[in-house]
Image (cartoon, rainbow, N blue to C red; front, side):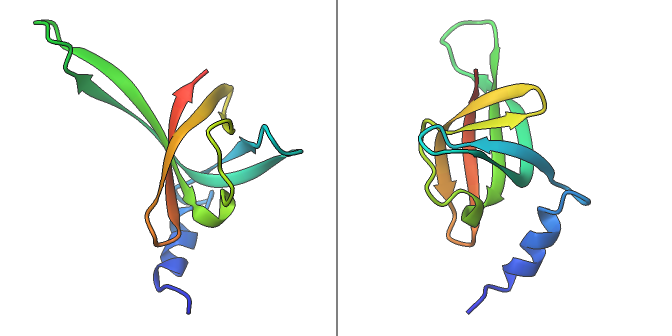
Amino acid sequence: MALPIANDLAAILNVEEFAQSVTYRRLNALGDSTISGIFDNETVPVETGGFVPVHEEQPRFTCRTADVPNITETDELVIGSDVYTIRAWVHDGTGVTVLQLERK
C-alpha cells in the first residue's frame, strides 16, 4: 500500500518547485545518475571550549530513499561545481533519506 505522503513527496522533490537535480556518483559501481532533492548547508555553532564562537557548515541533501537504495560512504554528490562525499544517512521510514555530506 502506498503511503499518502507519496504525492506530497513528489511535489516537494519536483525540480520545478523546491528541489534541484544533482549527480549521484556510485564509486563502486559503473556510471553516475541524476537524482533530485533539497540541498541545505546550515551553519551551526560548535562548542570548542573557548570564548570565541566557532561555526561550521553541515551540508545535507534530502531525497527519495528509492533514489539511493544501495548507498555507501564512498558515494558522492556533485552539486553545482562542488563535490561532496556522503558521510552518513538516515532513512526516515517514509521514503525520505537525509544524506550528511562533507565537501571534498
